Amino acid sequence: MQELLAVRRAELGRWARELLAGPLAVVWVELTAAEPTGSGRARPPLAGRVQVVDETGRARETVLVRLAGPRTKGAPADAVPYGEGAGRIARALQGRRRLVWGPLGTVTERLAALGHPTDLDRALAVPAGHGPVWPGDIASRCAQRRGELDPATARLRTPWPPGSADRLWYVLTQMTGHGGTDGAGAVDGEAQHGG
Image 1 (tube, one colour):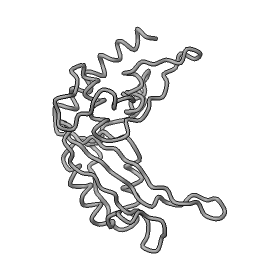
Image 2 (cartoon, rainbow, N blue to C red):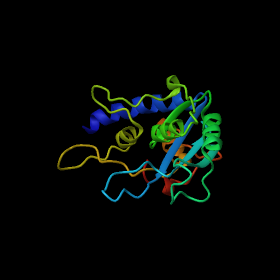
Image 3 (cartoon, rainbow, N blue to C red):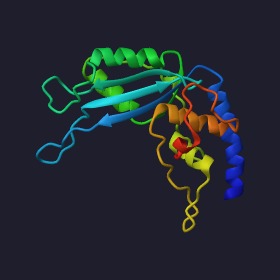
Image 4 (tube, helix red, strand yellow):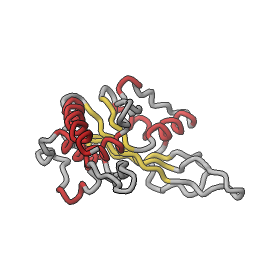
């Protein structure tokens, strides 16, 4: 398995170099969950924090956008209104390939339901499908890069999430084999625990 992972690491290096060579949006998304209903049914999220850095690690946007109606209690007070948030997200991602960790689809679906669609070009999304051998989502690619196997099952362990867009960018630069300490958004080696 480790021999297969060595080949996969080389493939991941080429993949990461290709992504970092052009206009790229590295996106980190976190949701603020709502309390469930009295019967235990899930409610839509209250807000979504979207962080975006470019291919050099420079910050393009960080926005906390409200995703719940005006009468819904519990939304963060510093969340921006739907229209403003949708516009900021669309501008940060416009014309760039998107490498996403987190539920960006949930954010854009809620914004559309609230009357503020973001109209992101689907062709610019970095595919996250499952290949014949290796899963292609970014979390799986991080696990493949690290190569940590569970000794009992020989399966890859789930990586610790990087925690922010700039840390995800750093992990991506590490996949290239060239490091990522030159960019303005770089973090130190200790901070990239999940990469």
